[in-house]
Structure formats: C-alpha cells, structure tokens
Length: 171
Image (tube, rainbow, N blue to C red):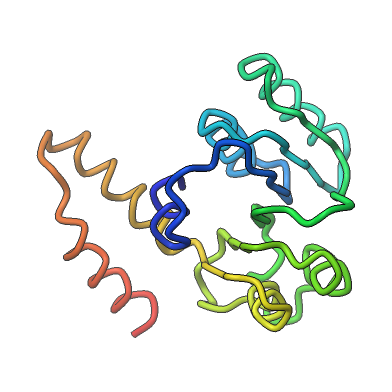
C-alpha cells in the first residue's frame, strides 16, 4: 500500500500527516500499521463497530505510541482518506462516508482500496469535491510484485505486471 500511495499521489513523505481510515478488517489493520510506521501524526479510525476500530487503535498504539489515534471523523481537513471497507464493490452501495463531509472537509487525497470498478462512487464524489483520487490497483500490483520477489528471489518486472494487470482488470 505504501508504494502505491506514494506513487499514485506523488507523496513521498507522510511524516506529520493526518489520515482518516474507514473500516476495521484485515486490510484496514495492515494500512493503519503501515501508516503509523510511515510516521503519520494523526490517525482517525471510523468503523460501524467501534470495538473493532478500538482493536486496531490498541495495536497501533502499542507499537507506535507517538501516533495520535482518534476514533471519530475529523473536524478539520485531512491529508488522506482511505476506504478499507467493501462499500463500493456493488453499484448500489452507499458511500462509506457522507458526501457532504467530503464537500465541506475536502481532504487532499482519497484512496479507495477497491480497484473494480476503476472509479467507485466514493472516488467520483471525492473528485467532484476537488480531491486527488486513486484506487487500489497499485496496491494489488505491489502485493503481487512483493510475492513474486519472495518466491523467486529476483526483482519483479513491475512495468510488465502493471500493463498486464490493467489489461486483465480493465480490458
């Protein structure tokens, strides 16, 4: 995820950033720990089940006590919103957060881990609100590249993999 975010947003240094993370499953947990490792200052965690978000907050706090963790929506604009929920996989899914919040808070960047469809309703709404957007295709790419490198011991041909992935996913 880190390589994808840095590449997709041309954002090499996250130290001091504020991030809103939506969801509390395995992908959200991995994202939260990676963001903390990258040095974000504030991590807002929002999930339907507050206890699940609390478990992620505890895991992050234990390893990265300097990160300020808030289990609520931010009241000020954030540098990044990450959707790690399944909302957006289906055409009729509601947005994972209110469209009015996107318009009023206008986060700088919105990343949806979902890569199919290429533009989810969240990304469309974020783009309309003036946010920079990206989907999770890069995350899938770099997961595959890391796996290939672990198995083969050789550098992954990322450009070839990216082209094949785009062709296969988007046609």
